[in-house]
Image 1: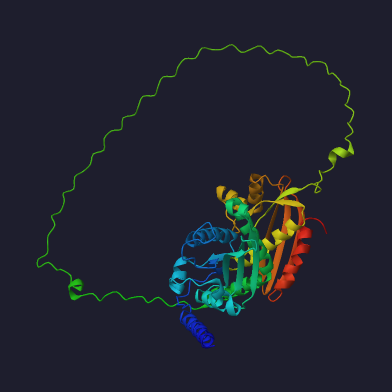
Image 2: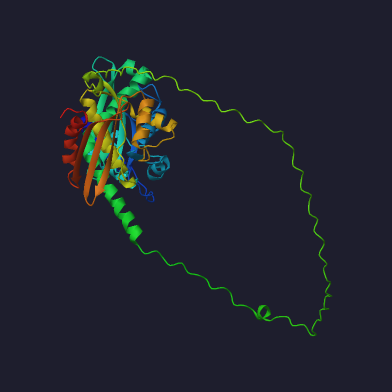
Length: 444
């Protein structure tokens, strides 16, 4: 009996000690100066291996955690940068805030991701991507591997997640792993599109307001420094003691030289040419030809060629043009519109990365500097049949969205779509995009 109470006492003492150690080992966050303002959504990416850390190295994973982090940061930075929507928190800022601390997934996710949200706010991030790779026992003596992407809004705490089970073939094939991760990001984006769209609009309006106030603010007057006063040495003039007499110059009469006239050249003698005798030319007799009968042109020859949309067309979707501070808003709308057109299964969509590569080769930019003719030319370079261009404008407090589908061969507009919305109608306007995509596709 005494041994039982002794063991119970030791267990309680160990549990209390563990709680004290955990409370002392709380993650400490340091403050940093605010980054330059930007309309892009600032994102903090935190890769975690679970259970973590492995004292001896990788544990059940093929790559060390450090290599995993480097690969994820590098790949995600390229992916997020190409979308144009996000701005990745620099690694130097993360080191200043977290130092050498490596929080576990349990620490980051407990209390509704409280620590994650605090770390994101300390880094001035609107969203945090917590990327977790973990292993679990499968009940047969083996292990199941999972890859999960968690997106957390640092202000509201909303969570958007997508997870996939990774088998041995997936882990050994880098291309397959890349496809799985891209699909996970796509799933997260689709589920978080309303939240991200609202955040982007609020941030863009704040920046636009700051730009307006900065432009309207009175500029400080530039103070002009008066020239230094002239010294007495500069004012006094040198006066000679005696006047200087200049001798008069003697006048010399100039006798004009007689002009020498050149001799005129003697005219050359040209032999006389006898005048030709006038000959009378009789015109040839007039030959009357029969008038040709007018040819009848069949009606089918003058009909305009019609575009056949029954086949699958290759389609390029360009980013919606928008003012600089509203670029992320326009890019989110573009991505949602791309998804809706993909769902219709009427087009083969050109990959956005390939489109950017071609524009870069043609010395063009996706920043509103590309006109329709250049867009058509780039579409031909991508072997596309059609393109979609559009714009997002602001009239007062109303947003105007316009888009059209153009045939690259005939330059004919095949579909038009437009809508408008005001602040607070984020879910409403995104709900209209399926119908807008059908209008573009000529389905309604």
